[in-house]
Length: 73
Image 1 (cartoon, one colour):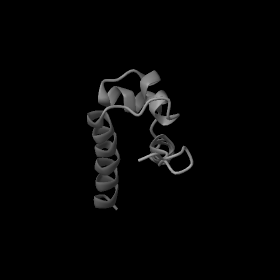
Image 2 (cartoon, one colour; image 1 turned 90 degrees about the horizontal axis):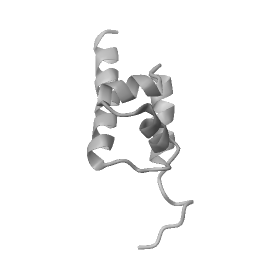
Image 3 (cartoon, helix red, strand yellow; image 1 turned 90 degrees about the vertical axis):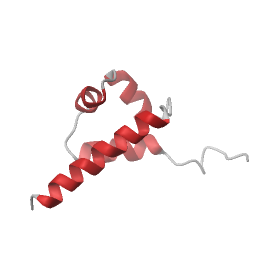
Image 4 (cartoon, rainbow, N blue to C red; image 1 turned 180 degrees about the vertical axis):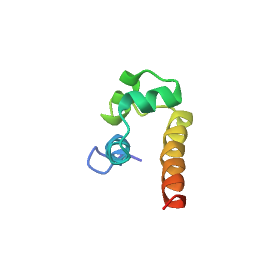
């Protein structure tokens, strides 16, 4: 299957927008995942895709935060 750049999902862009909407810095996310902030930056800029494990952890941070927010309102 050959997908060009236009049809690929921009996971990094989605993660960046979500991180910012939650009020997290790249440093906050990197600290929670025990990663270098530069690595988080590279994922957000689609310079690297990150491992499946890292992407799952990023998604878990988002889900956990949203769950805590909605349960406290």
